[in-house]
Image 1 (cartoon, helix red, strand yellow):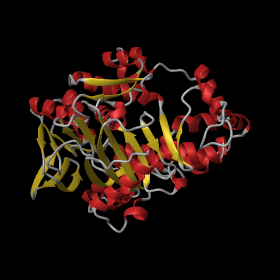
Image 2 (cartoon, rainbow, N blue to C red):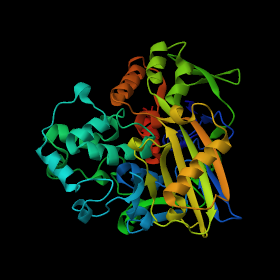
Image 3 (cartoon, rainbow, N blue to C red):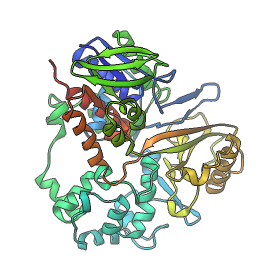
Image 4 (cartoon, helix red, strand yellow):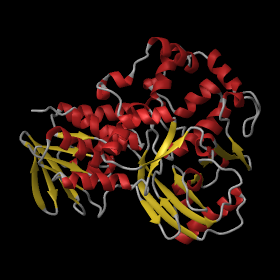
Length: 474
């Protein structure tokens, strides 16, 4: 039985990895770009002692998805760079709001004082949740902003939840689905009448040890157990995060999996005997296709034969993000931490700034990553400014916010078009509808990746594994 994977990003490579492990060969991965890894890209400057990441730089070792990724990292024998919970990058997270840099509370004690940008103690938001009754959500969903405002108040929605959503998916919390992105909290509120009440009740009533069921019924992965023991908050990889997709490609190649770069699938059709792909004007028959493509890339491939499926895929919107990497000589930050987020109510072009050189050693350099655009890309960058104009804009705001006088010595500007799917209200229903269509018409197709199961590295890897393990062994 022949199988093909479309897409050589992390989800596609993971699909290849788990297909190999479950079924063996023959297997081919088709990637349109000349490299693997998708949006994960690391630029190592060994001569200057730093790394630029235009995509993610850390992974969180949390829960089943975190354990699954650590199992993969361990099997690939990659060198991990842990950041423990006591590390300054794990403890200190900031907002830039109301004209100042605000350090967010990092302990229960911080709930009782009044700290900017908030105008009252945060414990009052918890009290509001305790006294506010739940209400059935229309269409079983609502926006994260609406949910947070209803449960905790407008100030929390504006200055805590909205910037957090900017950091997760570069999106507008007024449009993003609470049912998809924070399903646990939403379900607790709907079931028990409140978030805090639901969290406490669920501890006693719904406690399930993930390690003893499902994927890891035979025991926790060793590296995950180590992460728990040593209290990792997050971790990176020696040499940058792009080491992960490179190592996966190397592993697949060593096990006779054909990874074809610069080979874009142009058309996809299905029949009772399997699927047919058009790749470089050649007709390629396979028994099953796993698509790890963005939804908007898969849609045109199936449009001719399945216009309804294509239309459903196109209902998942995407945003463009500008990433600016900067290197300054010397240690210039007055406050160390993971970085800062900018609430949308501030009406600035910045989504946030990551302090890379606080997370990992950069040999005395100050290295920052500035993220801009997202949901507001057209507002700030719709007239297609030059790379210099983008760099000047980012530099202006970084120098003002962080009180840095020097210009960066080295920089990179990346505009990542349609890079992050937006989980707008009703997203879970849309994903279920897409997969139900595939099941109803018995298409030899599986879909995985950020559009369907979450934007994080852990999410896309686990998405691939679950889709592969749902395939029958025969």
